[in-house]
View (cartoon, rainbow, N blue to C red):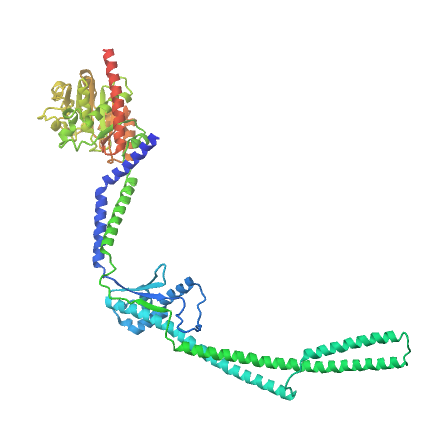
Length: 623
């Protein structure tokens, strides 16, 4: 868990370093974006907004107890959405345009479809939790847009009321037609009823129920007589006086039943027809009265000028523009520049194919990592101070880094005894001379006899570093002008001597590839315990490749964020193909603000100190 947390902290620190590295780019983009936003804002014509507030009720207020002709049966949401769409309708916009003669107004001249331009400046916004609607219109002329907003709401109310009145008029017209028709039906039904009464001479219809009960009584009497007749027939014959009298009475009852039944059926027919005609008269009269009442009510509604919509707040002339918003645009432009700069920084970092970390050396170059060297710009001011920082500031972090690297070099060396060490780089200005000089210094500070040889004859620098006048150098010896002892120069640093490049020859590569150079290396290996050779960059000239095969070890200096990975790999491959004893690479000029390098530094410092103590102990035991 602690390792995971540390890794996350390292990655975050890397992101901050990337931003710090390209902070000027981010600041530039912020400045350009902010100034551009301000410039566009100042060039933009101010836009004003006039707002009127409407109250839209679901139903019209009822001044009298009369149902309105128009009923809103839809739900509230549907009703209000409909009203909002009417407010933004093209027909309503066209009426306002014609009313205010906006075709010639500068705000709409040249806009093509004036109705679409009008609606583009119109905005309706319902107020949540209420029945209020804000109607806004935007434009360049404060007075004109106020006039338009008020005209729009006024026209909307007028149109709504007009629709209501038109509907009422249509309803009255229809009701009058229906009333006249119903009146004719009522009169006709009344005449039919009267005619029927006269034809049937009906003054008062008999009660049919009473006649029904009479027939029932007669039928009961008939049944009784038939029973009595059946009993008498058992004792008397048909011609017996009792039988004759009872038969005559039975026939009389049957006759009465038939007569009453016929009379009742006729009365029923008359009653049914009478009831039908009477009911038709009553229905027609009831419908006529209802239509008459509704006609009168609708006529009263037509005279009313009330509506369910009214203006709560009329639009007022605005005193401040709503667009452009200077502060908002400036902040937005600045933030866009900030985020754009951050994105561009990470994008450039992503596509930048340079060596940045120790992982790049280990994974891409497949080379041993010897250590990191912090940038010395904060601790020194001149090149000479940078080259000799391990001497002037032996307790500094940079000097400690060189000691760590010294240990790593000899730990990774393939030879059991590394006497000659070649220092080179991929391209110029990667700090190889500084590294070679300081490595020589820390070796000398360890008590060893050290010789620093300047084999970079094209861009020599050690003369200025050690304040030499103009002594003969390596090239002078190789051309046979001087002896070797005359080119070895002492320094103020104990145990450290220097050979500068000397007078630059026409063909330095030939001199380095000569037998004289091999002889030179054999001599100095006998005179000194360590020989550090500063050579030109690998991809610039062939000098380093010529000498690589003649030394015990070769190290490659890589300046962070300065050279492409492919170039570093190519340089390493050239050294290996030249049979140079490649020891590893040093990452130079890193920023210790990056926490990852801070960890690497401490790891290699402690690891190097342990190795250094073991190395000295082994050397002492051999002696």
